[in-house]
Amino acid sequence: MTGEVTEVAGNAVSQQVEDEAKAFVDDLVETLEEQAHRTAVVQDPPGGDGSEDGEYVIRLTRNGRNVFRVAEDVQSEAVRSLVNYLIGEEGLLNEIDIPYIPGTGQGSRALLNDEPTHPNGSEMRGQQRVSGGYYLLTNLSSEDKKRYVSELPEKVGLEIEFSDNW
Image (cartoon, helix red, strand yellow):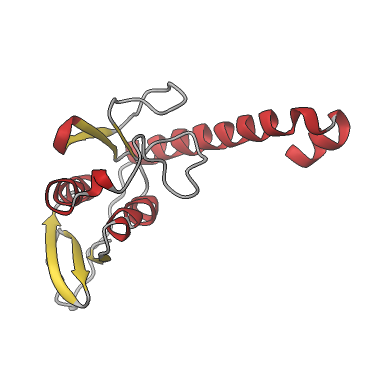
């Protein structure tokens, strides 16, 4: 989309169009994820694999040694517990900028912020309060939670593993 506009209007509007296109896509993804969270999905838990029924498990390791483990019945609670640990015990806030925007840091949605809004001023829907009075965006698909949250332990030298119902 940016390429077409740049070709027609010139490079002067290229950055503005690119920023607006990214914001549009971020807003669209957020809306679709909200709709997905409102739709009940029933799935049989995997059997015979030794999993802990009904739990989303996250493990952190450093140099192959277990450092932290959380098991919750709800994904967002597991992610919240993880972030609370990283803030309280691993000094995460010393390693990231707030608002923390995952990936390239160029998007318009914050994963972690000091207020319940995104950098573009839109409401951070589906957020939970975490240590230090910060807000964590939890209104994400399972895959997006794993992808975005995986960046945080890496900031403090930890490896992350998701298991069981993820």
